[in-house]
Length: 416
Image 1 (cartoon, helix red, strand yellow):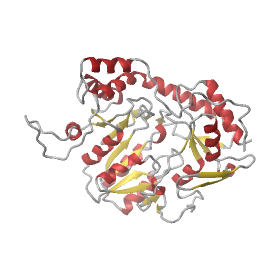
Image 2: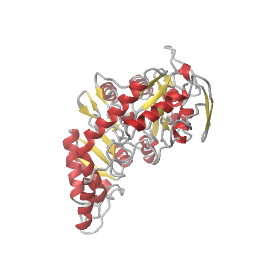
Image 3: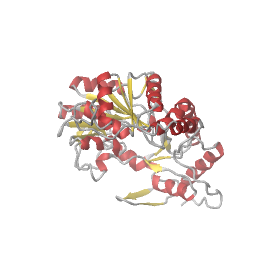
């Protein structure tokens, strides 16, 4: 094991994976809401952030909500998802992408990732559509701020008559062929959670070009109240509208989005250059067609450079080996020095709750074939392979070059 204790100090305070970066305007908008007593789910800040989101993204309509998960849930309802419908979902993602499908008692069908972007593989998506050509919708995640291959995904969805929903929670400000993520689907979600590239501490937004859908989503988000003197309810509704106070934070953050992206890019490129002599690579993207927002910088260890690592449902261990390392060792070393990292998202098909759901790879449905390879010699379970070999590095845009240098040396030391 690499012993860095004597050489490098412990970060104090902790060096976070990705924490909020405040600028001052946020407090002004919050304070104004407080002074004017607009401490509710209506107010100037909400109207402002919806307008700003439309101007920035190019989307026709925006509905500010309590979370990105709420936006995904309403998107599924707008898509007409019914109980027992099949909904094709990115497999390598956070559970909030898939959970709303179960809210509607529909059936998630999990679609494997590809190595080129770590996102949903269009070839695997086609296999799922061929198996079930009546799938109602596709929910596609732009992982770690890297755009999916939306042109191919949209072509497949149109061919089979499915609605496309973008989970752009991690990718606000990222662009695919010049257009912002969150504008390629019929109904799309962005997030302002505390660790996102801009934040309200919480909050999210539904984006769409359909005025009727935006109106319906806003109605559902306020408990589906009818326009009457008394409280009249003719549909099931939800308490999903954003607070005017939280919207004030988001309003103060939006002007700094491009600055935050530039800072995140610099962190990514610095890691990439520093690790060029290690048996690793950074999270990839299609440089010709996409511009990530570089929300998180991630590392993938070459298969031949992996030391032995075992993971259970709740714990992990590894066997140190000279010249090799693994995510568990690197994360352990970082944690002992006060730097926060994280494994890549554990794929949904490996999660206990979703383990029995259909799972499609580029060669068709796979179940009980862990470790199997396809005709090209690569693992069939791409998401599982990425999870085993990958990790997220400290990517906080307040991290100084000196702090990042320490992180870099800690990682390099694990391979010494």
